[in-house]
Amino acid sequence: MYILLISIVIGLFIAMLFLNLYFRAKVLRTYRKLVENRVEFGASHLFNKQKMEAEVYPKYPHMKEEIETFSRHMRYSIKMASVLTALITLFGAILMYYR
Image (cartoon, rainbow, N blue to C red; front, side, top):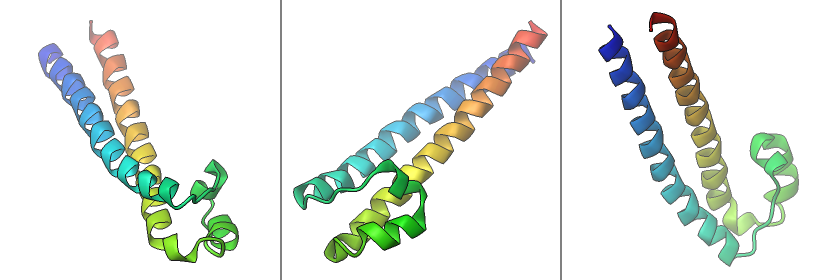
C-alpha cells in the first residue's frame, strides 16, 4: 500500500511538471504574439469574461482570437495545477497517516 501511494504521488508530480511545461510553451507562444501587437490587459480581465468583453476586445478587435486563446490557456493551467496540487497534498497526507 505504501509503495503504491508513493508511486501515485511521484506520478502526479511528474504529471504536474509535464503540464506546467506544456502549458508554458503554449502560453508563451500566444503571449509573444500579444506582446508584438502591444496588447495590454490585467489579471482581473483573465478571470472576468464580461470585463474582458467590455474593456479589452473593443481596443484590440484584430487580436480577439489570440486574447481568448491566451486567457483560456491561463485559466485551464491554473485549474489543472490546483487540482494536481490538491491531489499531491491529499496523497501526501495519506502517506503521513499510514507511515
